[in-house]
Image (cartoon, rainbow, N blue to C red; front, top):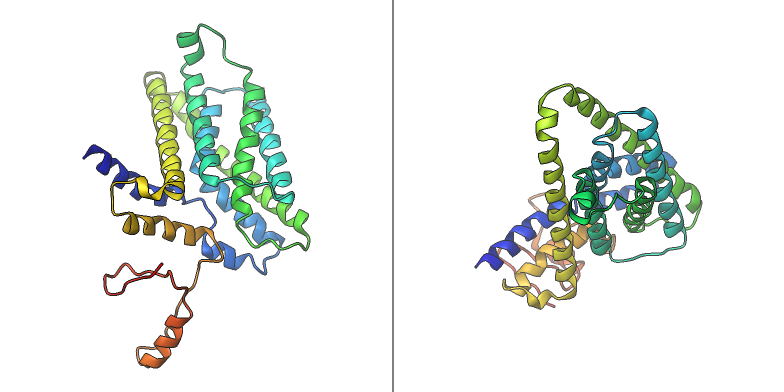
Length: 288
């Protein structure tokens, strides 16, 4: 029973896990987009990328000197820019569920480091944070690249499109960091910061763990759909719908001009749909 409840919970949260993916609307808008649209898309993607933002929040949580903040954010920026640009340009790809699962682990790592986990549990100093942030930046950049490669980028001016998207990512990062720093600067002046800083990082670690479970759940569903206790056919539709938001080849919008459309017109439109199109209204069935 507990397993069934857990699967239902993860299925409902999986929709949130795709919140910073590339939607069908993004894919349609980018077809004839200019560089400014790529900048906007990069900024929006970063500002909605809760896993990236949680990691950055953990990095700056205890930093008070501007030079330290600049050092670590620069290391992260260089790291994710390298993989974002070159992985996209060279079409290096991987299962984005697994990449996002690793990104979730980076959130857990930084929270564990903030809690002095290495000293408490392993009796050793923490690894060099600058290099760790740089390395994690490479992973985050690969995650950004897997999302960018879901778009119909084409081949014309590809480098400039990628760079424009990266500029947008940096702008979104600056906006997010500015808000975080203002909040943290104000919070540090209160007594509650000392009392709740530990609890905040425990919460950060739990959020990273939840994101990890969500991404692994999505990966297992795509690889082993028959291993889940719910009706395999109905349950897989949840992920088909999520994939439709991420793939430009699965979006088939059907619009009716008026209520007076004839049944013949509707049949013609229905014929334009792929054979595996399904409905959740209970009135129609689908074939595989």
